[in-house]
Image (tube, rainbow, N blue to C red; front, top):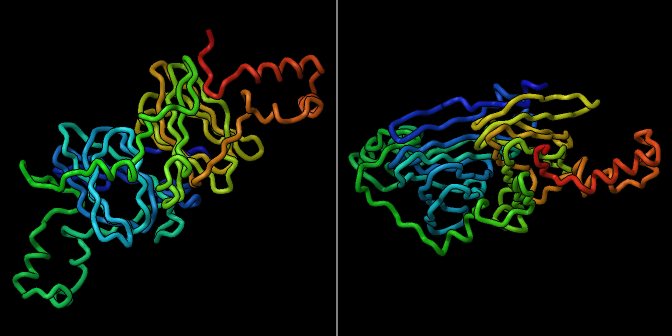
Length: 358
């Protein structure tokens, strides 16, 4: 099962002058199809533009590098909203929402996408429909259909259908005029998870933020939530599992490296490997995961298929062992009273993010 869970490097499926797109494929990693989740990565070069498109699945976009701007048109909306984006931004994109993405900076813009594909055409894959370019929606219709529906003559129709020779991602010319972003819309549409106060902050251990619908209402539109973890050098994230009935986790490593272990049914260690930046792995519902950062630390985003995720921990002040009565703990682990008390007292001292040994 280890090879099914990951770690997975996304294959490149498109490359052009403006940038490239990568997809983690359910054909190569069946766990994505089984969990009905999809993931991709957009890399835009300066002046790169991802042409207007929409998808068959709701998803979350996470800006992991660079800055730019996006235009977005929600279903039933009568106008486009344009906002700036930067590293750490979380952008929910509901099903059938039209969007375009532009790198107006001087370095690469990298955005990862994680989606719930349970309503999509291909479970385990977010399917996109492009509005313009060589694979634009109009190109699928016959010329007379386009001409009649748009009230265009033959010359005008050919201009609309054939002028854009690019596909998916293009590069704009210097000085191209694009819509200016609105600061007033950004607070509604975007949450910067790196700028918020952490839910957990442990000296020499790291920081953790869990972003739910309660903190960011727009997440309710996509049915997903996000956890951001930054482990300090050689620190550990305590063994945890999702207690939510829909709680698959997709964990994407942004920076650094470390070791991960996942334990599942019959206490089988189903994943035990080193992960590094660019890797994605999946933790199935109620499977237990724990990580240890390398010498440079490790940072990751975890996307959960629930708007109100809950995590249970096997160690620490909120450990499950702490909620069980002392007698049950003692007989379950076959410990003496004194040994059980030592074990319980250790739980009181351990945080969820555990600093390295002194």
